[in-house]
Length: 334
Ligand SMILES: [Zn+2]
Image (cartoon, rainbow, N blue to C red; front, side, top):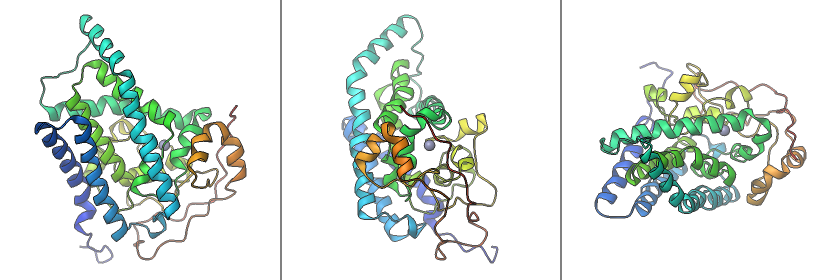
């Protein structure tokens, strides 16, 4: 082993695959035992969430990412009231119409979902289909500036921790539902497959935002893991306009937006390039309509990253401090 490269704890490389496999297996087992898909999905996300919370507190990757009580409560509120509630409500409100659409597609021979295939293969297919939709929706939010204020809520997090996964505007959540879950239901994907996809999305979201040092090795060419997503939350536009995948990174590879420089790690300086917004639930909900006013009020004139943390910064494993950068081009919001 290289003398300047200390041994990594087991959790660094084992936690990511272990929690994903355990949560998927647990969800499948609970459904096999007769529990409804809704509670089994909730349990299969909740238990890993608790494990991640414990590890984040005990062994944080960056001490500067530890959320204070306000940040934690705001992100929990987003997680429960937006990220968990909105897809459930949308599913309940649209399932009748979606199933009617499936029946129509069946008569046209277009409900092509391979429902008889092994569940693992169906999950893989569901991931590829859903990720194609979320990739382009996510990329559009970044590149079509009038839409940016909706997605800016997610990027306003300046402390990366697992609950920051839920800091997403309800309009953003609804978009994701209509480009990922809805097409799968229309194609005829069974509830068991959708349930596994929801577990994967929930647990992967917690892991990729977690304040835990995790390395994926070659898996980082397939899955959108923590390092790739931490780059996506960078204050530097060249880094944040990349790695759009939620679960898989394969569409970023295909369309040339994967960003993972060899031998480097993401900076701890995350957040909006243009402003430093306070942690305030109602401000975040109103941001699509008040973006111009609030980003002027809380404008970030220069990018000043927090000082490196000697406890977690190892030679050759961190980005150099990001340079000063001009703020994001102002967006016209009516
Ligand atoms: Zn984004």
